[in-house]
Image (cartoon, rainbow, N blue to C red; front, side):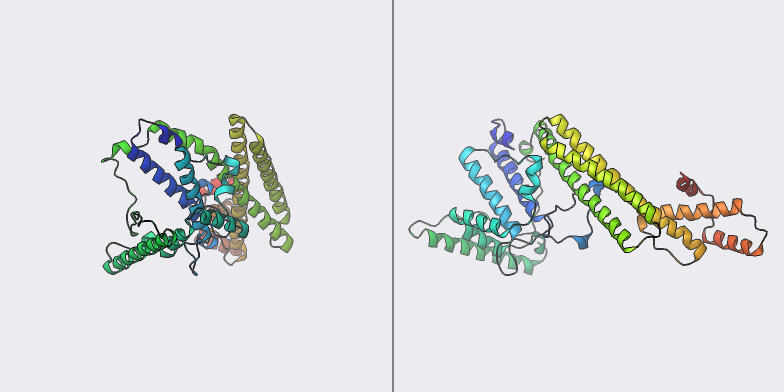
Length: 379
């Protein structure tokens, strides 16, 4: 971003657009995270996001009692520091290094941190304005241009906000003339920019590539840390099952947990090397090794869950009843049942009428024994 701002060949309006997009993106970071633990939304590896009931979206700009929410307060503080640095130097503050990035952008505020931010914004003379803006905030999707009544209420809110900002200014500057209000829009608009009409606003491809490359260590570290957390959760879940006697195969579970702990330990060691390494190549190698170990552990945990579910499904064919099989494990369970039927048909001699009846029932439950699925399970 600083390269864009310092490049004399880039038009001023393109720089303004890029600066606005930068601040918009940074502010979204604070709102698009779990309010309980500060974890970012949809940051899982392999494109998997967390279940909806496991996340609590950060509050809007104001809480139910009208106070500025933690998410908004962090966004305001970041914007203020960025604007202050830009006004003083013409550039933006440097982004924290990868190992400190999450601590700067993610996580709930402590009482002390909240108090310090409020004092900083009050000293800058902008806190009362931010309170008024937060109270008037309406989520962008709450106002639709096709709903005239709702749009009118939104416009009324904007006019009330302008009046509040004007009153705050007059109270703080009784001898000064009225200030020029900034443009304030109503929600429901599109963020789309028609670059066909404004090609000069496009950021040069070289700078975009450099930005992607600069963000790569931050993204890789975030993914590795999340995979580490998921793997630790799987280990804790397995240990709980062992303690409560919730498995019929405790020895197999113990062996699996040992393997998961080794993957977790090796991954954590690689993360430590990443944190202290100075050479970019060594840092990249360490973070890739950490991710590889965590992902290997998660794959083993997934396979163990599906093996257990498939074993229960095949066993239910002989004992009766229906085993609960997670949807992601059904292909493996179906293949296991098909293999059982195929084995019974090819290895058991049906000289006894009772055995013949059992085989008939098995065939009825899976009419396609010996299908390619059985080979997948045998492998």
